[in-house]
Amino acid sequence: MAILGKQRKQPRETWDYDIDYAGDMPVGDKVVSASASVVCITDPTDTALTKGSVTFTDLASKVWLSGGTDKHSYKITVFATTEGGRELEDEFILNVKED
Image (cartoon, one colour):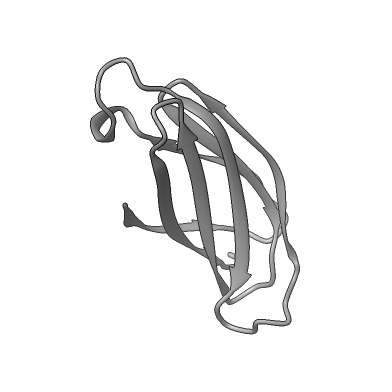
């Protein structure tokens, strides 16, 4: 699918991020599984951003993220599989910045 853009959070915040697949799937198909991965772009050894639960509905996925290192950027990749056999992959960049 696509890189969805950039998001921003502070290191001590916990946020949920939604990915809507409604415009990408035919009528009647639905998401049956979802997962996510996190990689620090700034420093690949940094594991400070914590991935919480990854949930899904028929037409969307949600990933919860907390923590992270100030001034570091992370690439979050969300994978979803549909009942019709489609495999969807979306990515976004999360910039962590202490204000």
